[in-house]
Length: 344
Ligand code: SF4
Image (cartoon, rainbow, N blue to C red; front, side, top):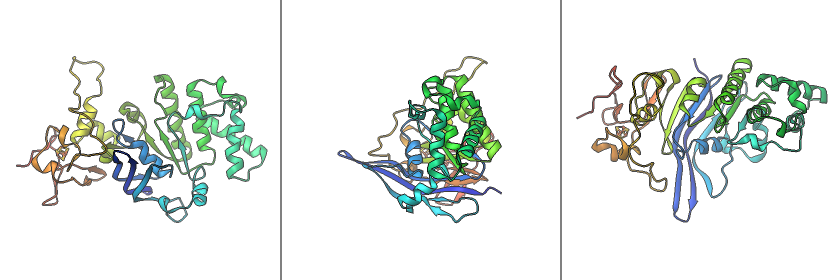
């Protein structure tokens, strides 16, 4: 049975602006199980990074957390709502229990400090390890991410982009956190370097049992790495399932369009399907289902009633009126071809 490490309930993150209130994350529900890699995918601007920043409590004005609960259940310790912690308690959670690899983080290494010094700084601030112990741990974490011990003596400019990114992941692993959150760690890297980063993250899970929440817009990267995948659209989660099942068959029409835009290598030439229309305005989300202006299956009720995220099969959650009838509470499973009968 899966044990929940992190559960996000009805999370809402809004941003004030002169034009109104941007509801960037607007009712997200998501769980991360212990010892899994959970992927979070969706087009740019859907709110993926804002969810992560809320978990890390890094939302700054004009943004604010309007509502929600983020329960973190560290092994052998009582559960805490991360949104209720004061700054001092948060300091104790960050790095030691939850560490974060932000977007474009390879450029955040200090250019005038050797890698060993940068790893040691984290350990000095958050542990009582001695100098030899710090050196030993620094060597270990580099090994976990596939970097040789000589990297400890290097300055960031002596490393390639992929090595810098892996050094950042090594720093995140220094205090053996229970959860590592990585936001687009492979973006803007070539495929060989991407592979090295993915191998480093897989190694982290296999060697240390660390749970990973991995954010990327790149479905191919998710296919290589994650156990389960959550699809986000317009500030909400619209579908969650194992990555294997989702690649085999998607139920939500947005997921179907997203996956059908992946180019297929080989076979006969086919025209790639695109998602109709424009991404919605975050100041004025469409009523009902937010995907209804772009959805080829939209029905009358889609623009009036918001579909809830419902578990339609074990572990498979979908927010769509085609999969769940809110009036009768009836679950409507897709046919073998992956299509739902359009209700009358
Ligand atoms: Fe399409 Fe309606 Fe399902 Fe939304 S609820 S995805 S509009 S069918």
